Amino acid sequence: MDLIYKKGTIEDIDLLTKTRIEVLRAANKLSSDIDMYEVERFSYEYYRQAFLYDSHTAYLVFDGNKFVGAGGVSYYQVMPTYHNPSGKKAYIMNIYTSPSYRRNGIATKTLTLLVEDAKRRGINAISLEATEEGRPLYEKFGFVQMKNEMEYIGT
Image (cartoon, rainbow, N blue to C red; front, side):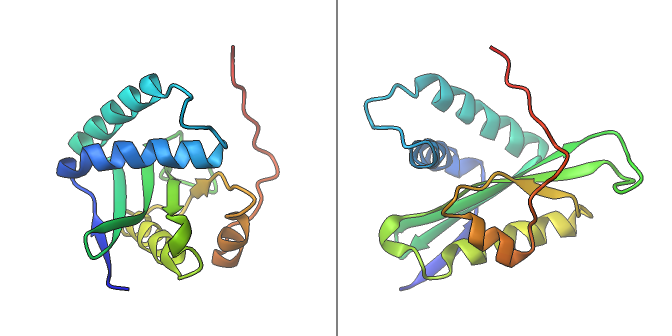
């Protein structure tokens, strides 16, 4: 394997958007006949804004010219707290490796690059959602299950 880890730019927006849809289909076990037009449209706009305001870092992984993996981290601000005086937070998403390339350290390397990017920005409050398949990687890296967080998804 000739793996290349490329930091995404605005020029990669189409591939990043396509990858986002692949990740969502895989994580949610959605078939290809499920309409993802709205999610794709909003994801494209998210990336456009994120690159404009430097609020997201993405990595694309290639074996030569073949796309084989990706990952991203979104940056945002909340009110300062005792444990996070700056209020700066990072949310890791879209960690993905093509099935035939899994178990080769691609996700670990991508996660390392994303966490390092957050730390360079002075951010130590980093969270993510984990699939059952991804949980061992994140736990090995040092992520722990959150105890007090809840989420409301309105209808």
